[in-house]
Length: 315
Image (cartoon, rainbow, N blue to C red; front, side, top):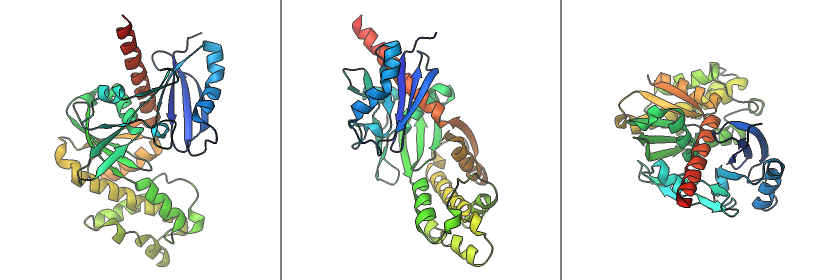
């Protein structure tokens, strides 16, 4: 039997996922739990109850957690690391709990290209993992995109997070889909998987890329009323408009900062496929990294760094 070494956890607003890992980060077991918005008991009590079966079998285990668990509504607020942020700087900012056996990864902050304060929490760990999974990211300037509720566009230079920009594309889509007249009620279920109406949304946006996104949104309802768009396809068309606007705007901001017309997409495969389609309309290539794998690799890197630091100080 392979000995367990530590627990890696991504604890977000809506979901907790804990992974029992060996020293190399290979997953031995996994368990789901409630996101921080659903937790009805002290975080330490819930965490210890989930850890109990593993610790009964393997003894005390170290754990590394990332995500909103380190926010003001989480277990304990971890500080934000200011950009430019090197990996070691982020890891050194971890907050220790449970007598030093649990570490929470800090978020990152910057002043973005639009001269506004910007923040991330959880994505920094995915970026740490991406640097492990794809060592080419440690060299030169790279543009990363981490699509999601709050999509992050990140400029990486020699493996350092120089700056980033947040676009709440997923949140805007959810609000407009579920609480506006742009999308009929019978089109609100299910996920957008690309193709068809989504591609049409990309195409339509790119016919007039200079237009602001708010001048395009009513097009969803307009094409419904004219009979050009079916009620079933309205959500996908809306998604196409929003993703195209996100991609087009971000490329205008960051294109002059990178040497190659390639964006590294880190996230759930369904979402990265949507963004890759939008990038192709802008003649940009896309390289994909699975978000869950990147998160686990990042948590493993944090654990290994902390364990080595402790071992060095003990000598």
